[in-house]
Length: 354
Image (tube, rainbow, N blue to C red):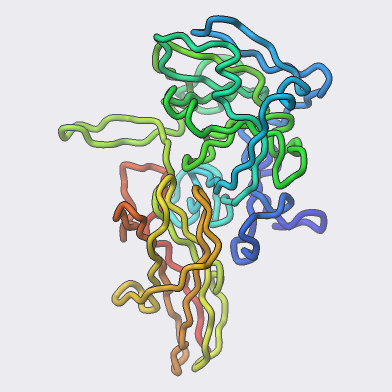
């Protein structure tokens, strides 16, 4: 449910997990108050004056930076879509564990801050470095086995090549300092990747010479893939092609024999959206949607489709599917090896025409 003070739907109060009602999608850049919130532990209380970013591990010099020193580095702004890896989980059958996200655990933000590579250059990355681990100030105990004993911090790693490419350490969202729920004072933005990589409340960066196998890297936020016929568990990374319908909303009643503007958004990780198609008969036939004019690397693409509603009353199932510039298209059915993540199969929106 939403509250008078917030347009977001509450999926859990503590830790806070909130999503935008996707049928309210209006802005190419998602307003701060509508941007989804994903927390694994209680939001940490951080004092700006005493906060420090510590960088160590496989570097030539261990360094500490305060906020003023970060703000003195070259500042960059990017627009990037961020999607929770479990977005759409409510569509899975049978039901699985995890936050019951509908379609709104996704947003498109204008992020400002410093490039991770600029911070790493200050410390000097060693030649034998392989990964960069980002650790947040948020911490707590894992409730279900398999689990480590005691409290752990949320932490994820990035391959060094990605870390020094386009990863941003964001200080602002849409021209405003990060709120506490969005990671104040510093969070990662990893273009093209699912939101679990966008570590919030960053307080520590460790450069590693070996692969990181932390809880949120190997036990959680991982999925099965097949290599030479053998199932192998790998960490989640890049988002997959996906189109979502914002209007009409699920179970909406639409009039018979009228023109209705079906609309939504599509994204595909690091690759641009090439086309979106819509089916109004449950997937038997498909027609092209019109892509919106606003384009930005690593950002979603709006789309719309003019639907002539049936003259006869009854339920109708609408579907949308995206294809990216690399030729990848959303699958028709759930990929079982993805578990409760990477939900990019066709997501049905059933409405009542009458």
